[in-house]
Image 1 (cartoon, rainbow, N blue to C red):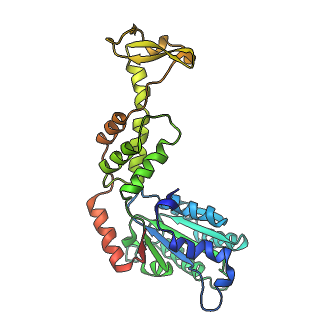
Image 2 (cartoon, rainbow, N blue to C red; image 1 turned 60 degrees about the vertical axis):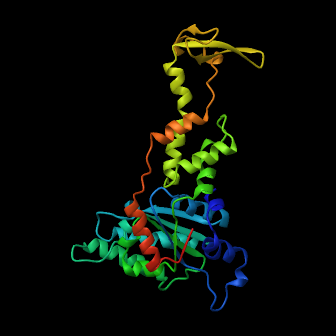
Length: 301
């Protein structure tokens, strides 16, 4: 669903259009071979990569640095080569390398021989030396693009900044995370929550919503009184205040499972969850990403 929230031009150029209209990409006009998705943590870079692969109907290979690093001499390079060979055999294909900075950090005196060999093999495979790489796209994701090796960075012709969601996107994220859970929220309520969460990432919003969704459960656990209500001509028990009309002193252990009516999920439950949470992305991280975008980014999303 993040594709609805973000601009898709780079993803379409690189993945979807070449598959649907291969006649457009002939001669000197070739699709992008590498796209780097970068930005603060929790903004949905991994989710976006999977969504793009699904929309393009491509074989999707998802790996992280831990999948490719081995303690055995030469094993890491073999794994990298094997990954690219499998992608070429199953074209159209997308290779998604998450946290690519852990695999391809900057060169320096403290760099190990194993790290240098992995980067060299990855560069060889991304260049497609001796192989036909048409139909294979490499997607990389990182929270710290400034830690990428320069040579690796250049292999990603498109470098797309996945920034924090704006108000409209945050509103949509609240709706998506609530999903089919019964609640009393209106469009205006969702808008209010979006405006309260400036600076929150998609991950931050997901955590806040999960906390809010647990509020009815907590009310059931802590209630000292329940009252009888009719729902579709069936008698149910729901938590209430001791002073409510018809309040019966009892706890949740006294309520039969088929008799329990959970309390409604209200705006104040979400407000409480938001107020007890904090955005996880620092201003320093945002500034670093903006600065890197000015120097090396292709576009924002």
